[in-house]
Image (cartoon, rainbow, N blue to C red; front, top):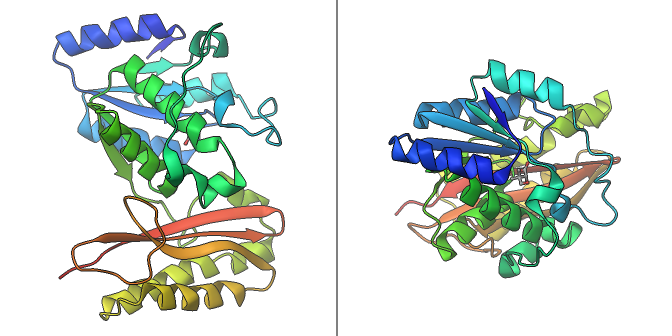
Length: 285
Ligand code: PAF
């Protein structure tokens, strides 16, 4: 595995790989790698001949209240994990090379970035969209894999790629779940044993939605209300939101129409831990 820190060098390597007709897949991360990242690498390896992993703690996606400086950066450990996972190139640029003196332009993803996660983290998705577009241009990837757990981020990246005519296929990796259905997350370790047990309410709300839509109901607002009741029945839960949205626009939706895709999205706090989860629903004829 080759480690590259200079965007110009990474771009030159990517250009050479393309001339050699290699199919390039990229997995973007902010480091502190865990099993979730490695599953994205495995998916990229199944689809692409060459896999580039990027590690960059992107200051632009951190709010003033969020601790950019204290974000974990276990680089040696991450590099060892990436190497053993079979990553071909590890691109880990310094901040000054990504945002040099004179850097001005950013990508504004529009209203989609201002709701749900965007209300808790103003400006966050502008930072994500900007760095993702930069990393796609630097790695010249044919394919980029993002986790479906961050569904709003995924939808925004798809929107940016479509609107900016980006020639990279954006592929979603399914949410990995614990045996009891809780979505895998590095935040789960902050839950007390009681909170951990109560947090399964998120997946119970998803299963309820799955059952109800499965038996033909299309009244999504009512199903979401029932899901909210399931979540709030867990002692100590504080939902930020729980509703169905259009999977492309993230606009809230009350009733499902045939042939369209929707997503049940939710963010729920247990004590100081904020969990997100989602489930995609393709409405048949
Ligand atoms: O999901 C993340 O880890 C980050 O938002 C990403 C996509 C690597 C951009 O910094």
